[in-house]
Picture (cartoon, each protein chain N blue to C red):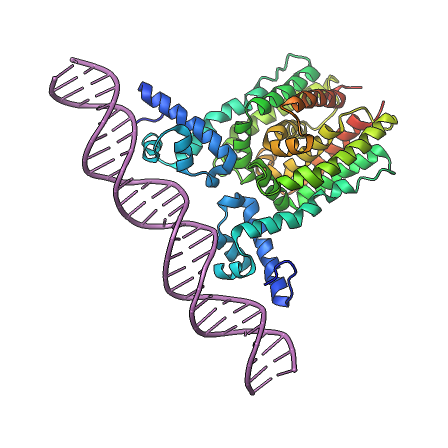
Length: 205
Length: 205
DNA sequence: AAAGAGTTTGACCAAATGGTCAGGAACACG
DNA sequence: CGTGTTCCTGACCATTTGGTCAAACTCTTT
C-alpha cells in the first residue's frame, strides 16, 4: 500500500486516527516508553491493524515528526522584514507561546526527541532549521544595525524565545505544581510577562 | 543490606559507580529507554550484581533523582536578600548557566522526568520546590516594591531563568546543530547574552 | 450479486528485558 | 588460618513487546 498518499476513505480516517493516537502517547511517554498496544488502544484499532497502515513503530514516529516539523517552525517564517522590528519579534514570541498553549503535545514530542539526542531529526535541524534561523538572525542583525532594535546576539535571542515559550508546554507539570492555577490563567500572566520582558530587552534606547 | 547508609568500601565504590552509570544512561534514554544491561555495562558490573545493590531499576532511578534534587535547586537558595538585587539575580542566572554547562546530564535527567509528567518527583515539586520559589518570589517582589528592580512578575521571571539556561543542556543537540561550534565557545556567547538580557530587563529606569 | 480489492483479526513468534536464586569467590577479622 | 560475612555470577524465568501471517470479513464496483 502506498502510504505516502492515502487513497480510500477508510485509509484517510485510520491513518489520521493512528497519528492522533500516536501523538498523544509518544508525547507522554517518549519513543521507547510507548508501546504499539497503547497506540492501538488509543486509536481504537488492533495492533496488527496498526501495522497494516504503518510498517513499524518507528515509521509512525517518523511520520509524526516529519508531518509536524513544518507546522512547528512556521511561526518563525512569518517574521516579516517589512514590519516594525520590536513588534515583529514580540508577535513571534506570542505566537510561540500560543502554540505551547494550544499544542502542548506537539511541543513535548519534539522536546522528548531533542532531549534524547534528536536521533530522528538531526538532519532537519542541521539543514532547513539551521538555514531558517541563520536567515532570521541576519534580518535581526540588520534591524539592530539600523538602530531599530537594541544590539543583541540574534541566535541566542531566538533560543531564548524558544525556551521561554516552550517551557510552558514541556515543563507544564512543574509550572502547574508551583503556580497551582485553577485552569489556564497562568498563560495570561505568561503572555503579559513575556511581552514586557522582550519589549524592554529589544527597544533601542 | 541497608542501602540507606553504605558501609563497606566496596559498597561505597559500587553504589557510586552504579549511580554514575545510571546518570549517564538515564539522561540519554529516559527511564523506559534505559535497560539494566546498559547500566550494568556502563558501571562495569553484572546485571545481577546491580540488583544486589539496588532492589530494582526504579530504585536506581529514584535514588538518582532524590540525590540530585538538592544540588539542583541549590543555586536558587543562594540568592541573597542582602545583596544588590540586579546583581543577585544576574549571578543566579550565570550560576544556572554554569550548571547547564558542567552538569548537562543532570539537567537532562530532570528534563526527561518532567516532560513525561514528573511521575517520581511530583511531591518534591509541589512541596519543597514550590515553597522555595514562593519565598524567592516574595523577595523579588519586595525588591521591586523598593524600586531596586524593575516591576516584573517574579514567578515567570524565575521560569524564564530556568528555561533559558537549561535550554543549553536539554536542547544541546539543537543548539549545536544550529551554531555548529567547534567546542563549547557558544557558552561564552550565551553567558554574555543572558547577562545583558537580564540587566536590561531588571534594571529600574 | 459476484468478483476483486481493501481491511481486520486471532494466533503466533522471537527477542528483549526486569528480576530471581543457589552456589561459589573474595574479603574482613579474630 | 579459619570462619562468618559480604560480594558476585551463570543459569534461569515470566512477562512484555515489536512484528508476522493466513484466514476471514467488508466494502466497492460492475
